[in-house]
Amino acid sequence: MLQWEAKVSKKSRTLLVVEDDEGLQSQLKWCFDDYEVLIAADRDSAIAELRRHEPAVVLQDLGLPPDPEGVGEGLETLKETLALAPHTKVIVVTGHGDQENAVRAVGLGAYDFYQKPVDVDILQLLVKRAFHIHDLEAENRRLLERADASPLDGIIAGSEKMVQVCRRIEKVAPTGASTLVLGESGTGKELMARALHDLSPRSKGPFVAINCAAIPETLLESELFGFEKGAFTGAHKTTPGKIETADGGTLFLDEIGDMPMPLQAKMLRFLQERVVERVGGRQEIAVDVRVVCATNQDLAKAIEAQRFRDDLYYRIAEITVNVPPLREREEGKILLPRHLLGHYARKMSKSFRGFTDDALAAINNYGWPGNVRELENRIKGAVIMADGKQVSADDLDLAEFSEGGGVLNLREVRGRAESRAIRDALVRANGNISRTAELLGITRPTLYDLLQKYDIDPEAAPREARQAAGAS
Image (cartoon, rainbow, N blue to C red; front, side, top):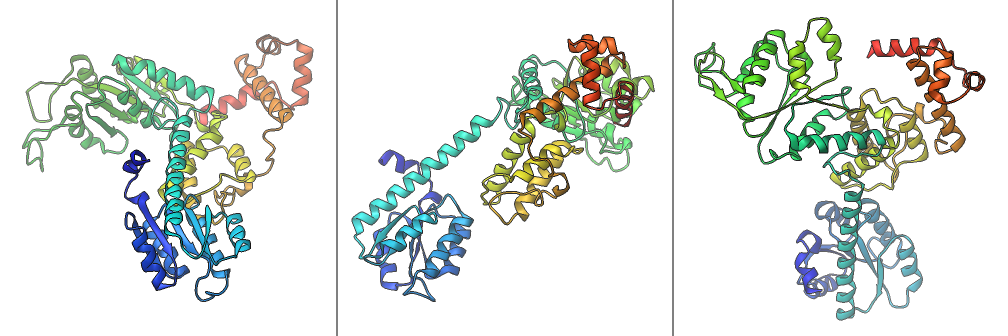
């Protein structure tokens, strides 16, 4: 027990005493002199102290003003306390023989109760045990959160596609190979780049990121390669570029597809020679850096349109990692929201029991064009706005997508999977029925039955897929 006490932080040793009797206040403060004791005499001051200090344990009298002879105000204080801080351990203190109200308080969520008159030894034991249970539960929550996470810090791999991405990153990270991360905007490409850095031998070195699309073309060269004093108007001192700054670590070039053609040639030379020349300088400076790039563009089309150099592409894409959009992550569409809800709830000192059924249906039905970034923003907003103990579709501003919540119905899930597989096979076979049936491992008559069942036009499916690819 003494060993456990040594581990308890000062914050977790804070005890809030809610009692309107000044004599009893002094007695309890003396009784718990090993703790940081806060005193509140009524509901308003108790809630104010709770918000300000977040005590682990509350010792609360049920008879509070303006109704010290009754228990109504005390029970309301208990409800509000647990609504704001559900993990707080509240020990209610009742009058002698008032066991009925003590049981009511426990039913509302109180951790324990104690009847007056006060026996110091018994009360100290109850409070000490409450702190211990609070600490064990907090540690258990931390372990559960850690168990839900993927081997890559900060990445939740709830679907098979994301598990494959994580495994690929784990294999690539120690090698030092130049890596190109591909994916739609908001899928977490920078998170993948950071994982490559953190899992590599360069993890103790710097991770330097630059967005090639966010910096004007006239400034991007000096940002990357640095400049000498007097190289241009305003160059008052010699300044190293991002590449030099990343020496010994990782340079992350986000939106590499937006890099201007003249600068692509200079970047290619750096990747070949591993030396840089600052703008306005003549000296070659050797730099040891790993380069990780990312883009949401189709670089093959950019090469055809002569907007991207093919030789640079082969240099930066020794290994390619494709990050799937959120809509293709299947199980991750539920696991990731739960993780984000817990994260923002803790950050804002709130507590939720999860999502309502309509919220889960909306998350599953919505297309998430903004991917993980949009999901994160919506959940953060919902944590701020939600009044209940569960986040609803309205809180997420997705009420219109909450229909059809029975996503766990096996027949419906199987139907969706069959329909999607048929459409994918039609696209691969370019609408050819025989080839599609062969890919699916079924006969032509069976395929025709399925096409009719799911109302699929074999000629339209490949055309729609091409149009969707062109739009993205």
